[in-house]
Length: 30
Image (cartoon, rainbow, N blue to C red; front, side, top):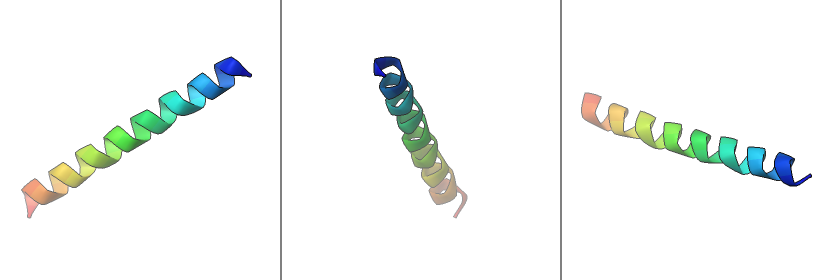
């Protein structure tokens, strides 16, 4: 169970980072 929780937090962090990067790219493109 602990490993599953770690993986979930790991992927959620990646998704948050990718979303932030996409926002920056969109702002720069405008």
